[in-house]
Length: 326
Ligand code: PBG
Image (tube, rainbow, N blue to C red; front, side, top):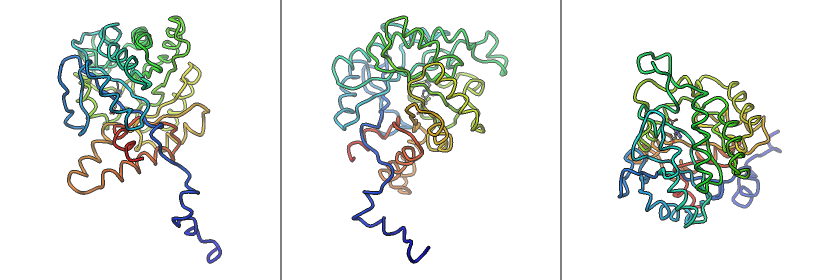
């Protein structure tokens, strides 16, 4: 009890870094990169200042710039030249992401994680094959089991191109098992699965949907992504993915879901990732632009909070900017 007990003693400049419980380093960060088959120039993403979509020819240069900051891993998202009902450009050998992964792995030392989803590739913008009447009937959306096969093909084509991990984000039940089996059958036993095990139906994805042109043309994703009201269900989702063979468990979004992140950390022995999503990035930029927040300080604190809550690694649009200063 006071005056004997004085927590302030541990906050002096001489001591505080020795006793700090969490830290951030560039090697914990994954930088998202957008590759666009519809352009031969870099296109700035308005709602995500500092980010751009790059043509395949510039993918390696883009990733090289990321690596120069000390960040060692990127997650690649694609905007295809054309879209159709079954998202066929997601699993084409000459798809935008497959071509980009080939170039990046040949020309840089980055480890490449492929985002495995169909929403950027389907003309309806949903994450899988639709029920025939989905557009007219808001109670219907994606056909789960038919979608699994396409996600598995997508993952295999990214592994063929050189991805070191694949990251299924479609929230289809059974997606990890389907992908694990397909990867093994294709001889990719050492390609890991970073599963978006716990992905909420969040409004914080707004800017990303502009960036990757993946907004649903009608309806929303509430029938396949998780209800933001639910906490216990996150453990169920993560448990299923562990059983199905996930190597890393990701929680998304990040900051609004620190309770969930801490739960997943406590419950499982797998590495845990947090996705500091586009809306979290856009909020800080918008406030900083108005002079209301210090961008660098709030970005650093955000990522530290994710580490403190239990993340081993963080996917973040701040990766490059922060790594440069770490
Ligand atoms: C789906 C996917 C999304 C994000 C990553 N992968 C969008 C969605 O589910 O609507 C969002 C990432 C972000 O907001 O930063 N391919």
